[in-house]
Length: 161
Image 1 (tube, helix red, strand yellow):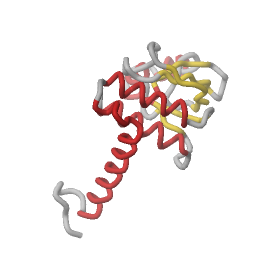
Image 2: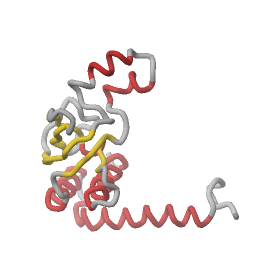
Image 3: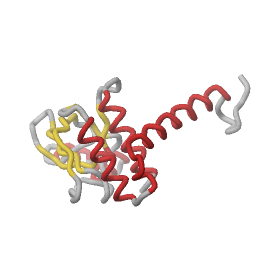
Image 4: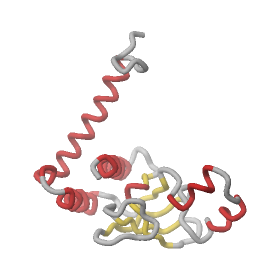
């Protein structure tokens, strides 16, 4: 197999990767419209309105990676017993939640990004409710329409902050 320009992937792999990114950029353009050329606030509002209108709620979500408070426990060095105890009262990236609503204009203690959309979730195991950052979540059903919408938003937010 002939190596591509990055030295580690084949031309075919590079083409596929670029194709996926190009498709995602087209979806962003369709969602953002004129707001893409405006302020970040305008773009966030356009994304929020699109998500409110098109996400199929409730939908099951989970964390994409450890939440900020979990990092020292997941990476090691901190007590696993304490981590297990804290996970009973705090949200964990390993939990499954029902995403029930979205909101903008304020921030929760659990959110990593100040400008993120607030995701109102209900933990499936015990019904506890949390307000998490939508960009830190992903739908569990990879074939669902919601999976693509949340992923598109998260990738856009992280790359355009």
